[in-house]
Image (cartoon, rainbow, N blue to C red):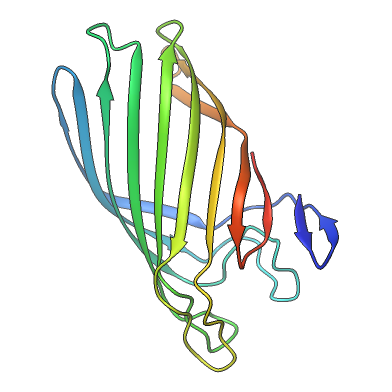
Length: 180
């Protein structure tokens, strides 16, 4: 649900395509580390008159670094952090280039079985540069969220899925809502 101008709105649709052509990772007995480069292609549902749609309407470059530390030898408890820096390109429908964004995601998880993990996750996202172009915003927005997550792995099919619900607990100069 999105809150805009005192009203609530919700939408289900396709988001932009994420392509990650480069990922490097290292694995040790109690820790994992990864770095990568990705980009977002503006292929999702987007309409400038409906800002709640999941497509952004512009290309984005993304640089990522993250790690996981296992708190026990059996690797049933884990603490992880992932940092992403996104560099936005000019919007395809309006002459505005959104500001760059830094996102820190974190998690604490417990493996219940070899295929089921439960955890507490969250993020802090901050716009780091001003938007540019005529009529663009000069406010640097941010958002903080926290919530539960369950991850499931099906070895026979080689499938992994994760379900999470994040409640935004602090928001500045952007729409407030929940992320599922």
